[in-house]
Length: 233
Image 1 (cartoon, rainbow, N blue to C red):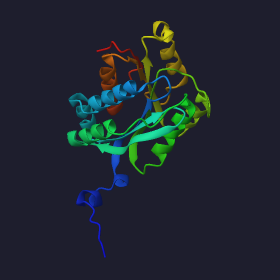
Image 2 (image 1 turned 90 degrees about the vertical axis):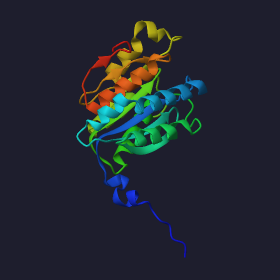
Image 3 (image 1 turned 30 degrees about the vertical axis):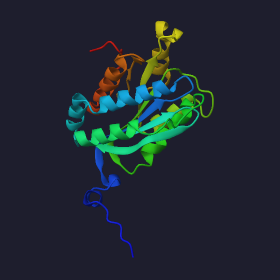
Image 4 (image 1 turned 135 degrees about the vertical axis):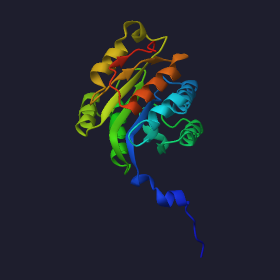
């Protein structure tokens, strides 16, 4: 008879037995307006941010010294790119970053923002992890919702479950929304919500990774900064 040996660390610290400071769903835009180079760009930005010393310091400074994170791409469908990972050390963060860069694109099609928010809620409620705080971090370059539940309906359900929604509106250089700041206003009024909810704006240029890093620091620390533009230090 063949026996499978499980690592001792797994036996001693199963994922579902862990208590963390934060359960964080990273909902990343993979809709039709996002091409493959931008998929890669976003993933690299999150990989660089999650391994940055400032982010790791923020995580280690929490009550439990750890957070649980999953990365999900959303469009007409939602797909988990990296499953729930507890990050407490630089090695944990490096492993998450490596796993993030490997898979092919997993979501495509038109926007279904309401469905994406509800998928974030489902992932949090079904992960078996105990988090002191629970957050969905939604990123996107538009506010269109072509199918599935409405944004308002989904947002109401998520907030009623005690989950905070933060946002990362991505302002594209070729979009008229960039000049008027409409996307920021829409995300601020229609998407974010819950205790300490905030948004950090970014673009598809060099500031993206810095914006993601700032957002992860604030989420890990449990800060309540309101609306933070990309240009903020």
